Amino acid sequence: MKADEFLCDKEFNGFLWHSKVNSQFLDKYLYDRAVGAEYPEKYHSTRSSAENSPAVRAKLKAIFGIDNTDQCDSTSGRKLLFRAFRYNLRHRPFGLMADMGRFIRTFTGNYILSRTGFSVGFTGPDGSGKTTVIDRTIQRLGAVFATAHAYYHFRPALFGNLGEVAHSAGIKKDVDRNYSDPHRGGRTGLFSSLMRLVYYSTDYIAGYFAKVKTKTRITRLVIFDRYFTDIICDSRRSRIYLPVRFLNLWRKLFIPSLDYNILLTASSETILSRKRELDEAGIRDINNRIDYLADQKGYLKVLNESTPDDAVTTTLNHIFNEQHKKNLRRLK
Image (cartoon, rainbow, N blue to C red; front, side):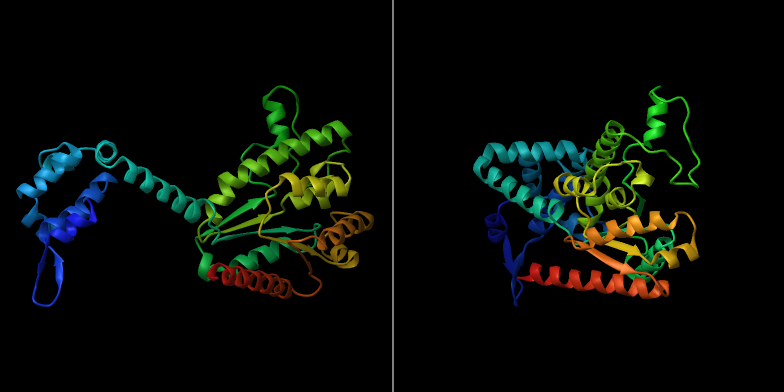
């Protein structure tokens, strides 16, 4: 209905002008039925007063091609929406195109480009205290994100484990499922490393838009225990043996970025005292790569030498400060 129709169908109650009951009913009823919703029971008195009036029936006939509200209630919302579209296309084609343009612009801004939520990735050597820090970070944010957060390990996992996929395809006979030893695999060559990189990158790209962006566009939190950053820092775990600078360039060119990337680590002595997953040389190599990434935009190095709560506080202070800056920019 056009605004002029509502403006013409008004009455004065001694204090202000307001729409008459027919317009009050049609305003909500037409919309509810077009989107497949039921007219609210709390407006029953308005419906009873208006649904059988000739003006209401004429409007239902014109827009939906239906004689009364009983028929309208039993017709699917999709069919009614199509009929309303056809009515508008016939009577106001240019206005319809303008409305569709506004809808696309609004939908894009509110749903596709919106970023009221945020994503956080934690990377670090085994023994850096990642699991504890992640758990306590989620706990601290529980008041806001108690049921509104998603947790992923390493990648979005839109596609299966590479070994399992190769086994299903008949390329690989056996699958090593000894997941308690993440560094058990041998060194791979250039071709194998590139194939792994392409496979994982496809999962990161497709999975980001399918699983991450769908949550962060609204006020949701997505946490990764390891992300693509782990491929750069820990080649033995991912079995992708490629130069660090090449992997970092690949990340910049192809991999969707998380909002916050936390590089959690500690000294070799501290890590070895907690967990002997790696030797000192392996820890030193990962820490050198972490230092390389720490200078990159979007990364924060956090030393977890004392208590996990100190690392959590440092992490959250960084996130809140950056979120505050983003929110101020949105208000301008």
